[in-house]
Image (cartoon, rainbow, N blue to C red; front, side):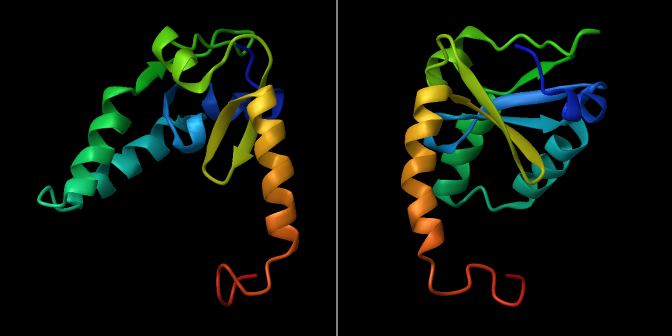
Length: 128
């Protein structure tokens, strides 16, 4: 898969691809993945939700190094999880990229744009 040109410099030193929510894939620069690892390391292992999330998140993580053309290999298990068969979409999502099956993204975006447009309260008080 080709990474969008505007993200290639940041990801040139390596990245981590793992399972994300809503059946997309998360792509993190190495430093951001390390930061998340530290946060989850500090979370209480006595919390079942932390254990469950960490297991799936880390067990599916794959370190990748883009080639000179900005291409990376998406492992078969991650392609299957996200339903990536042919066309996909890569979006910027704050400190990560997300890779979606094109039709799944179109359906999600159509549904969420209306919800977004109708928000009547601040999602992030004091920010937006």
